[in-house]
Picture 1: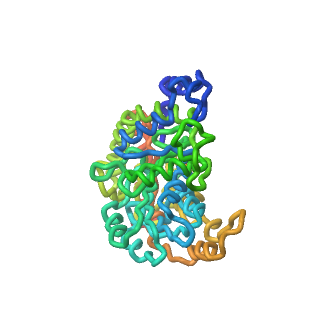
Picture 2 (picture 1 turned 90 degrees about the vertical axis):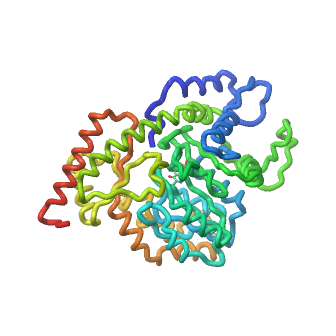
Picture 3 (picture 1 turned 120 degrees about the vertical axis):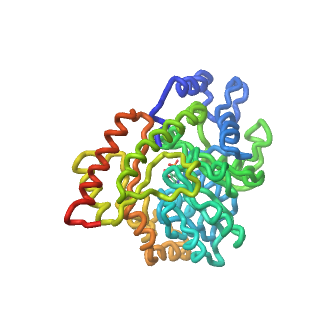
Length: 405
Ligand SMILES: Cc1ncc(COP(=O)(O)O)c(C=O)c1O
């Protein structure tokens, strides 16, 4: 997820605009900032680029999720359905508003299996939060239909899928709200930052206040602002927004290189009959950040991973099943509800129930999956060499007598 790979004078120029004025905060200081409003400009650019009516920048993707959940009225007593495969931030945000993250199986889209979602709905379910993992999208129509039928909120964690679209609409702009992360390893970066996108004015107004201690932002005197509700400080700085502003202008370039490199690598891997690929509900909308591929069994996948490590070609490839941060198998802190401060006993009990659930369907998908991160810096020659080395490893393992297919 490599916007940072193409760091340039464009980012330096935007940051310098802010450094020249010395006004690093996004609100206030109207005179000294001399017309430089990078955060506002970036929010406008986000609305225009992704087709969202409103955008509220935040300090991170995690705080964007927390903000969105709060603005959508999700809190104590509510359950939020979210996948077993995501980055820990997704369930952290749900917990941070006092709601229960109900983890549900993924299918070969690498996010929520609509059938599993249906089975997980209870009288406490308030929202469904698919995570558009690794650059591609959930089965949005199926999940949106479930939300409609059960009158549930649809919140898209699109933190990893900037630039992906589904049936012509950008992911993150389709549900009641959606979020992007602009951390350092995302398709476009602010160094640290995030955004909540929504088409609902009331949700946006709540996000706007919530991220700035509840300020209503109605006047020019911050001290005179009213505080209609309690908020927090999830503000982005002007320096971070400046980086994002340069990057969003370059996003079409990033995406087109990413797609070209993805196609070339996929064509090479597709020559091996034992390799299959992630199901992408709208292939034209894949942002191509990763190429996610499957092998026939966990045993074969592990053998391929081990051989890739032995040959020094594993960097840039992710075997999520063994990863501490992205799959439930290694989330012991969640399963044991280990927090620094006391949770409400009901919440603690509900969280710990995740430990007793059967996630064998997720295991069957994630244990066979390897995701290859697509670099913007690769040359055609490098992709060819990389792909051929990967193919040779897979063929070697598939052909080995020890592990027949
Ligand atoms: C799916 C997902 N959600 C949320 C986040 C949180 O974003 P941030 O790192 O900006 O807090 C991430 C970050 O990697 C993510 O991958």
